[in-house]
Image (cartoon, rainbow over all chains, first blue to last red; front, side, top):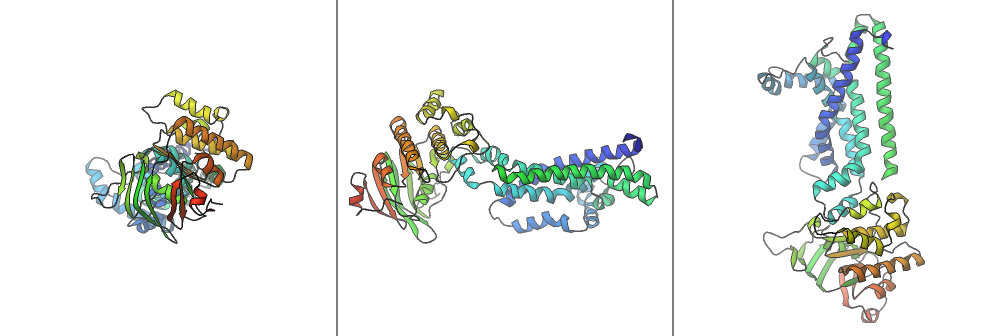
Length: 227
Length: 231
């Protein structure tokens, strides 16, 4: 297959896999915390957080990208501060990671939330009656019993990150060899009439996405049988 | 000793009102279905918070609505082993790891584990997954797990429900052995009068959330005007 790829194409695939994996790993702790909070009892502002988490699923990705650009840009509230600390974000790989995180966050939270909700609260009660504090209950009962749903959610989020386009192009640009992901490279190639360069990238994209979603779905569908 | 003073908990159809001292060692609780028996245990375990009253065990106040700040000891610090009616073995842990889950870091010895395993005849099951246990085996593991957490009291909620007669007799014999060997005070919600006869030293009859009779187990059926022995 490497014969069908230019060195730039190989770089793009490797870069996309790395940033998607990094984005998934970086959002996992916060995503799991939000999912766990949403799965629990009612608290003030819960409905607002639920809605905010779901927004990237329904908003145009370009609109989300524009919000990110305004926030992370040199004159933005967050980007300005980071720039002064010598940590520019927009039009770098960090912006690609940020866009991927925001766009795939809802998929992780939704799967993990369902997984947490499916854990029998009686088991957590019993763990407490056996002397376990809240931290141990979470580590030794809640998390292992929700593990399949969480792993499924992480894979779905990773697959979504791989295909991210609209927000990325606004906040990270489309700079070959710097911020160009598989989706952006395919778009570039087609725009320039170089369809031959797009096909191998398309094939890789389909295979990776298929595998990620297939594994995620098989994990999620087996979940009910375990608990 | 467990002491409840005007402890109340509103339930869907009535308010559970509990009052009295329960010296045990085994307190049998009987009453018709929906009388509030399981809620009684959940109150003691700390899984439900009463609306009013005072609750203490062995001199330690778990809850006192009249005090400010209001004392409340959470379930994890009550040291009360709870064996609920529903199946609550941790499905992702082996039998051995279920049994050792609640063993305190200090104050327990390997011989405690061996003793519980022997009394409940759990040795052949230790390395099994919980999904491969029969109903009776699951009950025994749940009882063993509660005992091994070194509780000050054990709460059993109809642990023999749904078992056939020979299996009931076997597990009842195991519970008798637990009572003799470990001498841990127990509040035992009974499924039938036989369990009360074998295990209980005193009996509480609950009806629509109120204690209708509380006294020694000898002759309790007559004393409570007979017939509240559950289902």
